[in-house]
Length: 448
Image (cartoon, rainbow, N blue to C red; front, top):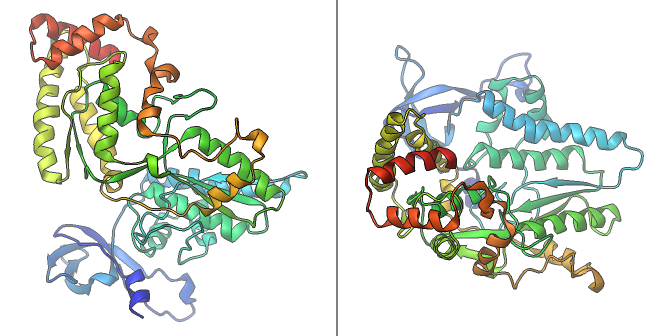
């Protein structure tokens, strides 16, 4: 009984002023209970009476209510962008499934989810199975097709525990769509964790510039980002891009030839060597750029700070990010160029706030199906097609980036490698003069 209760119990703590949904089921004559809207809101938290009881109010003139926390859920307005995200990840999948049914020679469907689709459940390891939502996926699909935001918000509010962000929830919902509407089709679900550069194929070290964790790595490597909010000992789960591609091919073959039951769920996640601490990952990136400087670098990174406390992070970020940004934006105005540095730091903080959860939690995953697919590979094919990457290390993969990644092409930089290195060393040494500031304004504009 306790385990079942705990699985449904909310782990949210609300503060005064927070907007919440309130669970308030009412029976109405002539209306099926399944068609009722049981969640009301938004309510405003007026006062926290104790750890589990809150006083809430729907409007300034309405009567206040004392409610247990298990009847409350965070209110998240389903705006246009949220609706678009759910449509892209869920409604489009439903359309693809319908298309598969119409194909005469359909063999297999492989859906790319994420290993963090069930990151709201902190009972590890996360299994290679579809974790079910409390409602049939058809209800979500109907709300999306009808653009019924209130109904959709009500359904989401009932799904517990809450997900770190809407993207992870949309992937979990998409997996439920497959289970509820395509169980008779040969389908595989691939769940990659944090995607990094290729390990071997087509070339070692290939990685797109604006892709996942690469954006953070480039910001650190170019000296733009000097502090981040996270737990230094939190472990990142890294997996090479070519391993993920191989998993898609092998999963399609396995479900298409009925070697595996459908839907086949594959956690495409890290081996021990690529399950690295956040501080270790950042240290490796700094070591890399010291040996191989990046084109369009702004400053050589000498000391990166990882702050585990939110408010302390804001104080340190103000000193290392925002105050210099104000000065440099002022120089850009003098040069009659558009200031953008301060707003870019604001954007960085906004984006990272949605993934901060993953910089404080270490995840463990089952890998049984991934290891099973690897055993199906013919020995002659292992050179070009493998899922065994136990020999891959974070340092080895980092050192392959200068040869394989497009962002290490010095043709994109107007300055030579020696000139750029002198500039970054000069900024790192703290010897800034008017000539340096003039150069920085020009360089920053081209770096953006």
